[in-house]
Length: 213
Image (cartoon, rainbow, N blue to C red; front, side, top):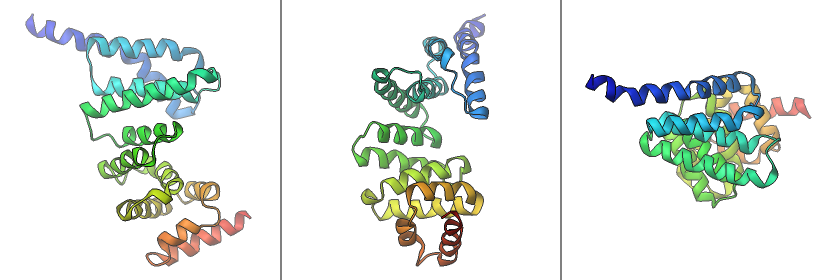
């Protein structure tokens, strides 16, 4: 009986959070923000946390606030508060479980959107890589953010950006080229990173980009 009583809040939390899990999985699959359900889903996540304050529920709440900020149907004046809540919940999730590369990267991205100081963006970006440098689903976003902050990267951060750039090129060249075409079309930063370390990869990128011109 005691075990049941102790487990009951966790069961209630998992039950409350189930619609959030389903909605976030669906968004991951099709990229469609559930605009008409975001408010309800936020309530489900908050109730789950009230029953059992677990890092996974905080992460989900952060993702929902982030989607609310991205959602074109969110009124303009409500977007910044949504991003601020996304950042706050990401921090709460990371305090409970620091080894979450996607959450570190979301925190960096949200701070970038909010125009925080560069170091406040770069530090969680670094931690995203340190916690799992070979997470292929994060390569492109890491490269994009790193290129955008080249002027503020120290030697360690430049080495991390070079590493992610090459990993992305080897596993997702088409996706990386899209990032480079948008963020470093002349390859000025990419050339700086690779001309002495991997000139062959640099030449391949130059050839691919040339075809897009």
